[in-house]
Length: 149
Length: 142
Image (cartoon, rainbow over all chains, first blue to last red; front, side):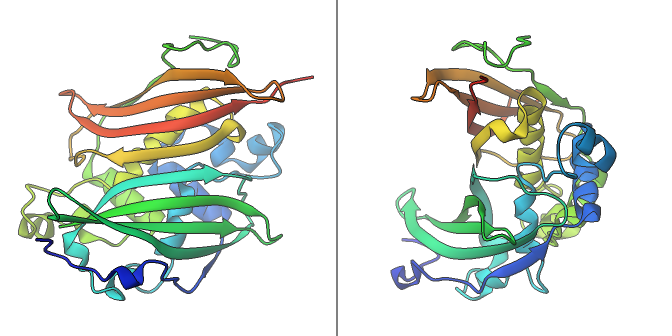
């Protein structure tokens, strides 16, 4: 029996979109925190010399956007899932267009699927997010899979 | 090491990345930079209350290391898909080895080369932390 039973009715549930301005400061902090040594990710001058308009966001930077709220885990509260019972099981990105410092990204997030493994003792939820920039270009999509014990 | 990124063959390893040590400071820096306030990564007592011996690393920090390995090998514009399964929890004092192997090489209708890369992050005891996949496209130069 699943310890956490979620209604299948929430499949398709959409969350309010989140707007986020990608600052140089946040990219530099992210590069530092991930021990990045390639200067195109933190040095604007060198990024330009390498043909980029400015500092570029690295492949997993988009994860930051979901955290830019007063309560980053409100999306779990809303479906009565306790953070303490959650593990991040998987993450998937598809990239369409680069993200640069100065971009204004809109993230739309929805519940894509709910399924069970290990005889129902673990519940999995897939959240799909779509990221669009200020020119209405879709830059990426992601699927974040949480396991709930 | 293959210097021309269009010349990888199936079975080739790409340049790996070694992360010498995962420390509490690494987790604190990542928590600040990512905005993730979850105390399971920051507070030992909190982690212990949840049955863990100590704080654990953010899965996304380890995936970021894997992403660094990919962009060390290929310009980021070549990266089309990138996914990770978090197999086990990364702990303080883990030494991480990120590695990747070309498992498929094909050419699309426009003559671009497409690689599928199998990805892995193991610690110093060969415990698998992440298994992942990436699709890389090397655009045909005219």
